[in-house]
Length: 368
Image (cartoon, rainbow, N blue to C red; front, side, top):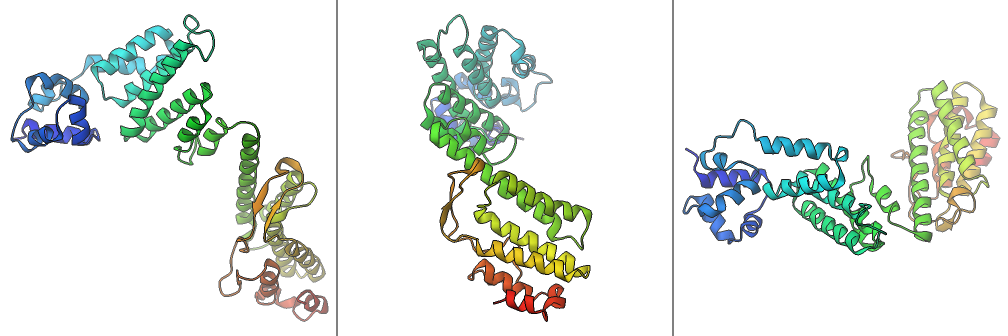
């Protein structure tokens, strides 16, 4: 039969709490907790109520192992927590305080309390401006409670909500360095990306630079997505042709002066694909026209730091010194230590799809 020490251990692990942290909460030593769990001693009766609250169970369940059918207080608190925006600010704050008092290590309630404290910081009765004494005090409390959740909570959704709340508190108090610390904690996934979080904390030139880098990253990603449509097409299909056209159109719109820098490689692959499609249909002159354009772009691929000179990317500097690899490397054909132009020359004289062009004089001159 399970004893109370075994139940404490099981519930502690379920709540993702270490022996040391549980001991801190209760004001005892970690050795005392270890002795309970090993069945050598039992917790003092005065610790049963706070222990049950920390482990998110009733005292009856902690002592007997039999869960209560329904915890009416938790049901009520959950209802308030899930619908907190519907309540008066002060009423919501007081209810959140009661919830965290009765269930002190329920991280959902602790996040709710932090959100309520943030809301109270801007309560019209107490606040005249964001830097007012009351506002700062409530923001500091919110950060403290969010930090507990961030450090201890194993639920990623609750933890990310706490990160967001702490970041907003710091930002609203103009503590941008601290806000960035929280922004960098975000995983790079939707709906709140690390980049989006950092954007809310940066200012001036740093913000402008961040937005340019994000635009560059998104453009890079978009071109790669389109490339998967045309690169793996079996022929001149409508969707593949559309992907080729749209890649060019987007790059011309974003970089209207034609200083494509790293995106010259994308255009190399666009025109290599166009040429391959034309060869397959017997349009050899058109294929050669496209191969010449491909090589023009290849010769413009940079291999050092360079800056974009117009459009939304104007002034953005990218280091291309380690970037000689084409998007889709052909094993046994491409040598990534050579220039993009040399890699493409080797491709078109090696890949059989271009074999019908190999004896043409204009093709041979292209390889010079």
